[in-house]
View: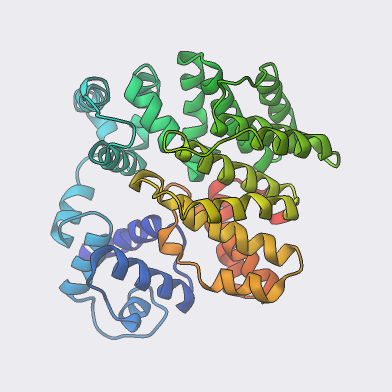
Length: 386
C-alpha cells in the first residue's frame, strides 16, 4: 500500500517542481529547489534512485520521504498519506459547499493593508496550490471571488497564472472581465486572453480579444502596466508590420517619469513589453526595455510580491542576446540563471523558454522530452515554432 503513496509523492514532487524528472539534469534542478526552499536536502544520488534513474535494491528511507513531502507542502510523509487518501470532495456535496463558502469568505471579508500585503499574498498562493489538487472546486471558486475586490486584485491581477492561462485561470478571466469594467481591468484581462490564444495558435479568439482591447484609447491617467499590455496586444496581431507600434510605445515611454509611487507599474511595463517583443522576434527592441529594467532596478527595491520579475528579465536578456547573435554574452546570462527563482505560477512557461534556448546552444534528448511534456501540459504549441 505504501508504494502507491510513494508513486503519488513522485507525481506531487514533479508538479511542485514544474517539470517531469526524466534525467540526471532534472534531478539537479530538484536538488537545487529543495536546498533553496528547505535549507536541508537529499543527496543527488538519492534523488536519482527515488525517480528510478539509478538502480537500487533498497526501499526509500523515511528521511527521504519526509523531505520530499515537506517540499510539497506537507509536514511529513504520514501527513501526505493522510491528506491524499481522504475521499474526494466531489463525493461529499456538503463538505464541498462548506469549503467553497469558507474560501470565498476569506477573500471577501479579510481586510488587506495594501496590495503588497505579504501575509495575504502568501495565503492566496497557498489557496492556488490547494485548488490545483481539487479541480472540482475551481470554476465555482473563480466565479465567486471575481465578485470580490480581493479576488480581483490578488487572485486575478497579482497572481497571473501563466502555467494555467490555457486552462482554468484563462477560463476564470471571463468572470473577472464580467465583474470589473474599468478600462485598466478590461485591457488587463483581454491582453492575457490574447496571449493565451496567440500561444495556443487560435487566431479567431485572438482577434476577438484584440478588438476588445483596441476599442480603448490610452490617456494621461493610464498606468505604465496598462500601456504595456495595450501595445503588447497590438504586437501579437501586427504580424510583419510592427514599426508604428514600436514607435508609439517608445513615445509613450518617453513621457513616463519613474517615481516611488509608480515604479512597480513601470517595472511591469518593462517586463510585459520585453516579453512580447521576444515572442514576436523584436530582439533589439526587447533589449532596450530589458536594459532599462536592469538600470532602474538599482534605484528601487521591488516588493516581495514582485521579486520574480527580476529572474524573468534575466532569462529575457539571455534569449534576446542569443537571438541577436551575441552568443558568448547570452550564454553567460543563461548560465547565471537560478530557475528555482521562477514564479511558481509561471515555472512551466518560463522553463519552456529556458529549455528551448538551451536547445539552440546544444541539443539534448532529455531537454527535448521535457519540452514536449511542458508544451502538452500548458497547451502553448506556438512556443515550439519559436
